[in-house]
Length: 209
Image (cartoon, rainbow, N blue to C red; front, side, top):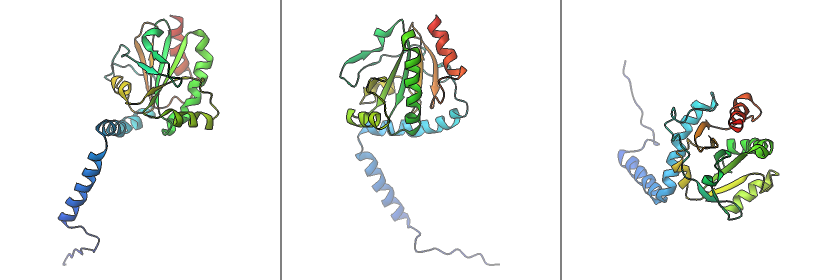
């Protein structure tokens, strides 16, 4: 029996493959370095999100190789007012990294507003750190989904500096910070139900301390 291999007209020569790779590499390098770093971080973190999503829960920062003490966070809110997490000592702080183009983030946003509404008077502050979007895009998302600009303290991380400092595992990622500034839990992926025992149990425990 003779095994024949037919080379179709669509088969590319080695020179074509190299030329195509060269073009793609040139296009990649034309993207600003800071943007390339964010793209790579988000791409690789997608793999982590897939594995974590099936077991969504508060996880130890140590287990994930993340800092146990809350890193610095000083960003402007939508009104241009600087917000510093250091000034929130004595409160329980939820730091959520999100973007309006991230579908799980969009679905989670209402849960975060409910969290703020339910526990704000008891000493909880939700900081929604937006990743690299301009104010008009964020306002468009809020208005389009019926949210007030004051529904949450939205902070603008335009250069992704805080996102990198906190070593967030993709979008969305949420950090739960105690009154003393210690990271007590990390939630990788969307929080789908803030009324669940897993979510509110941990928060209420920290609020009582």
